[in-house]
Amino acid sequence: MVTAAIARQGWGISPGGYRRLFGRVFSVAVTLLGLLLLTFSMGRLLPADPVLTVTGAEVDRETYERVYRELGLDRPVWEQFATYVGNVLTGDFGRSTTTGHSVASDLLTVFPATMELAIVAILCGVLLGVPLGIVAAVNRGRLIDHVARIVGLAGYSIPIFWLGLMALFVFYAKLQLVGASGRVEVFYEGMVTPVTGLLLLDSAMDGQWDVFRSAFAHIILPGAILGYYSVAYISRMTRSFMLEQLSQEYVIAARAKGVPRRQVVWRHAFKNIRVQLVTIIALTFGGLLDGAVLIETVFAWPGLGQYLTRGLQFNDMNVVMGAVLVTGILFLTINTISDRLYRILDPRTR
Image (tube, rainbow, N blue to C red):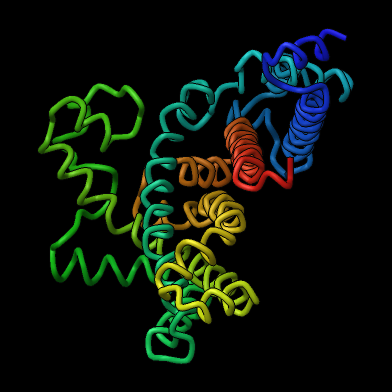
């Protein structure tokens, strides 16, 4: 009754909108609980002794049992899971045995680095992939179309770590055009006070242009390589969507009426594929995190992927569970935002 009254007074969401909103919140909550259960089970099933991770291999039995009880491993599994959920809800992901810091503080440090890399990559993908796909579709069978298809095929065929190593060899070792590893030169580290965690943005806001140039020189190569794979996928899907629209009757009719081709492409055909592109771009952005694990390893990029890799190498389960959980939450967030944009751009789906 309350929601109906609000809707009648024109204050906002209709009763149906509230039901969908509550349904969405419930769905996200259930998914997060399932993700928590998955990460907890992974931490218990992997062949790594959490006690030995803390104490080291050379430990006497008394110390081993004491740490075993301190970690709560002597309690029932369901109680351990309930404690884990409660700790995560308060932002406590445990302590990393690798860094000695809390996992939450580590994640706050490494996550912006991965986000910055992914943002550069997706910008490359959107700014290059969408126009390339459209031009290829409009010029089907011509040279630019063949180039776009080769770009897409190469993006699916070339291993990202191999491409990263080759790019480092050419652009850093031979041409000296870009920085090598890390986010910035060593002597610039710590000169910018983190605000957003995005070094390019923070250094620009702080007026530290030397740091900005160094950060740009370090991110351009891993960002471009990671972005190349998004260019390949986005251009291929854009070409496919655009070809479908260009064969529709309304496009043929518009051309028959003498509407300029540019207007037909951008005002009519592109308008009808933008909803599909939103979904593709959102999925691509989420998929960049998979590629970031490899590209961060090649370029020693201090992000979430390298943090997760180091956690796996040293059996640091708190790190692994925390990184996996954050990645899952990010996927959920991206999907929720893309779903909302989908509804905004296409009123038929509301």
